[in-house]
Amino acid sequence: MTLQATWLEQPKPGDEREGVSIIDVNPFGANGEKDRRLLISKGGEPIVILQLYIRADEDGWLISSAFCDFLLNESQVAIICGDHFHVVEMTTHSFRSHPLGDYVGHIYSVPDIHSDRLHNRVLVTTYCHVFLLDIAAGILWKSRQCAIDGVIITSIENETVLGLGEWDPPGGWEPFKLDLKTGIPI
Image (cartoon, rainbow, N blue to C red; front, side, top):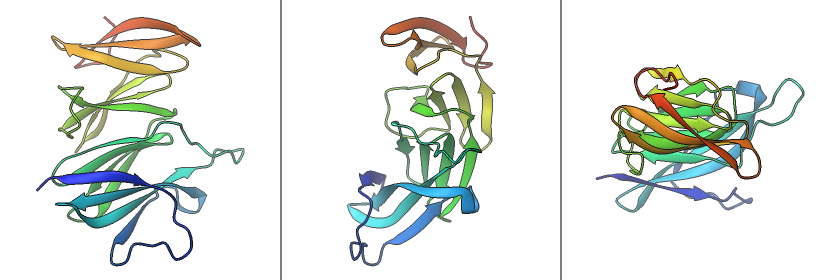
C-alpha cells in the first residue's frame, strides 16, 4: 500500500494526535527551529508525523522558504524545506539531510517531472540552482547559477533538463538547458 502525506497546521496545546509517533527531522541540533509538520498515512490510517526543522543563520535569521514540498513512495519520503533536502526511511524512521546552500524551490521526480511519486533520482531547484540527487547517494551535481529569484524545470528531453530561471524579477524568466548526467549548461 502506498504512503500518503498531508501538511498539518502547527499544534495547539491538547491538539496532539493520539497514538501517532512524531519524528523530529532536525539535523541542526540546538540551532533548529520547528517549522512544518507532515502527516504520513498508509491506507488512510495515520502512522507518523514528521516535524520539520529549519536552521538559523550566523546572524540568527531563520532559513525558511515560502516553498516546501515532498515526494513519496512505499517506503521513503523526500522533502525540501528551508535550505535542505531530507530523505526519511519509513521502516526505520531514520533520515538523511543534505544542505543545498540556498532556499529551496521545487522537487521533481526523474525521469517524469510531472509524477508525484518518488523515484531513485530527483531534481531539486533552489532560488538560484538545480541539483540532481540520488535518494541513496545524495547530491550528484549542482548546476551553475541559473537565476537570482527562482528556478523551474519545464521538461527532461533526450537527457537534457529544460527550465526557466528568473533573472529580473518580477517576470524576467530566461530559458536554460543542462545536461542531465553532469549539470553542465548546453
